[in-house]
Image (cartoon, rainbow, N blue to C red; front, side, top):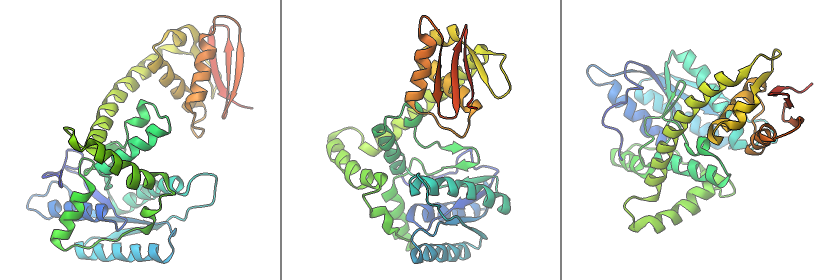
Length: 322
């Protein structure tokens, strides 16, 4: 769909900042917010733009920053620019940059006095995310994709198509920046964008709904189901937790073993997060704990990332590794 005709409830009465990269989607977002903020009796206050310069493309990154500064001047808004250089590590540069970017959004929002930060994710981004996570073997939580709201971050254009936003900018004569790295198909997301999604669009051309819209709709349904299961798991965890040493979590083994698999997996993930929040677990780790809990006889231990798991009597204990 084109730009939403009215702002959503997440924006009404808020002090809104827009995260802008200089690309078409974020430029369209900035102009859309500006349109509503400058109407009589505006629904929200548009307090400024946020730009994060990772320096990954050197001169091009600096040119993106200058473009965003000019855009802020056009909109008569302040802009908070943050440098967030991506360190060399074992993680992909894209994942590291994303984490740095969202941390910078929080600091910039505080500086601007914003209550929410809008990002310009679209239905195309949603479809790419669902496919990427599906190919990596994600469960329902991962397949629920990009959330319309996560904390202070709001994504009001999540139902919009990328090409519709570009068409509207062209019609209004409003420029944007092209990121050359978006054409690099060695990056998995770009490969999905340029190779897999066009193939899906061709296959789904004769169906009732196109591939991108169907994938985005699937993510919405998955998010609803995930929220229901997550709330049920929180309730189950409260019933299964037993007294434990500080920094550890003990669960009633019989209750964990008897729980429906979707809830048991979530309970284990929640318990692991309490013990070692900085050590993400994979499905392999969660399944190993489930097997330990469901085994008929005997004790046992598992040495997992950041956590020692022990089956002792009627308990499954998760504690920090010494």
